[in-house]
Image (tube, rainbow, N blue to C red; front, top):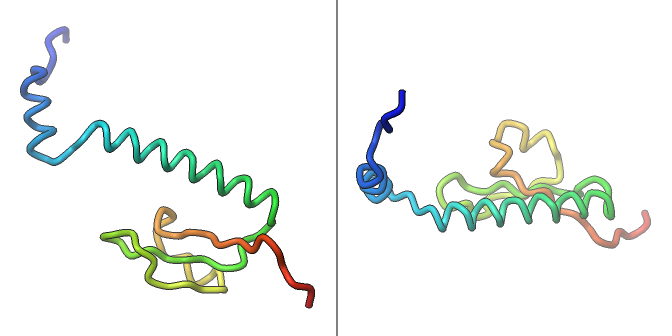
Length: 91
């Protein structure tokens, strides 16, 4: 198969029709990679998260916070944000 399935014009028309923006997608991936790196550093510095925020599905805004990890197990991983304490008080 040497012929492309879609011409470049057809591909770009499909991108416009379905709202795909290559620049936005690249920026979101870069942000996600940076976020993952920051979480890895926090895990090394702070250990386990002290709480978790759950983001709503549509706008990805925080909708709840829980101290129990079992409460977030049914949610999609990209909707869970671990929360860390940089300093912890002694019991």
